[in-house]
Length: 198
Image 1 (cartoon, one colour):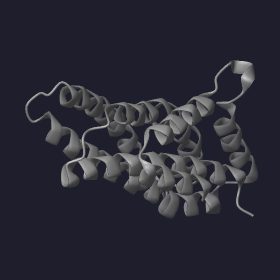
Image 2 (image 1 turned 180 degrees about the horizontal axis):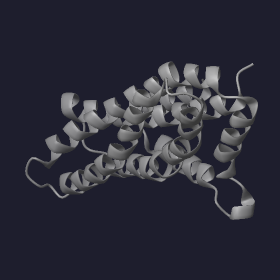
Image 3 (image 1 turned 60 degrees about the horizontal axis):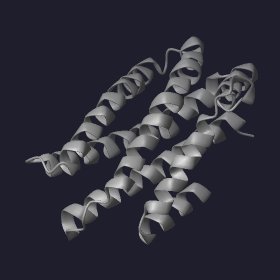
């Protein structure tokens, strides 16, 4: 039986992937089909990425999952270094993407294409990153981590929602996620719901 912590991480990846799908879909519709920009939806998507993956999900991976694997084996050292580097570059990319969205909304020259280009690069980075974690890192983790390691990792990921600390990032993420679905046109809403339920 797989450790529950893996399911938690994969569920979080599914939610992140659904939001990234929405961003990619919107960019494609604007770029290829001439759809007008849905700025409230685009802002909600970027708010989600800033508030959940970059502030909560990635730091937990670094501090607990990656650290425990590094203590147990050197087989994953190069892979872990690569994943940590991707965590570090993701947040500045989102800051830059947020600034480009503001420029786009303000009608600045070349801002539209600059936003599209960076959004595409960010989505590809995050999708490849999550696949790398699930396809390459998790099999190593399952091989080298013991029950106590997995229990600590699971506690760490669940601790974010511990009412004792008054911190509920998953509630905040779910609120933002539902806002994205409510603002999205039907194809995004359907795809997002399907991804979340898988």
